[in-house]
Image (cartoon, rainbow, N blue to C red; front, side):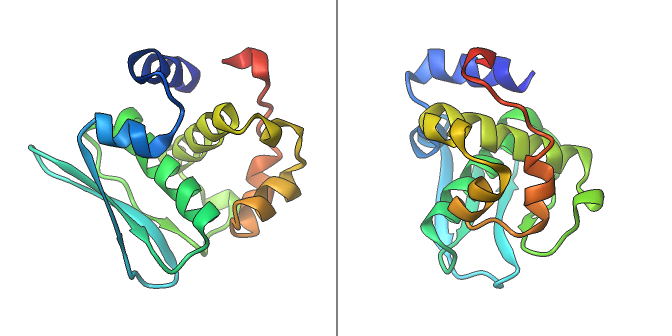
Length: 147
């Protein structure tokens, strides 16, 4: 389902750039100061969606968070989803959060193919993700052919 959705987005907008895709989907992106534990959140109502990103986090983490929140927008359109936080545990990742993480990793892997050559620790370090994400990254087996 995730790979199919990413392919549909790419076919429609000819990009894997999550900022451009969000803009094409009329999703507003707001960078603002949030609690240091909160990386991002999506706020939506019947007429519009806004992804709010913490402007105090590393730019690579901002991009991963944007991709994660975009994943919620396109995969969980009508559902209310919690925000991406710094503190969590691998075991506590809900199904919706896991799908948004997988979406973020998959679409960013298409944009930056070198990610596919990285170890889970290197991916976690590159995106400045919390430590619990290393265990999650180990469950992913992306490949260029999967898309």
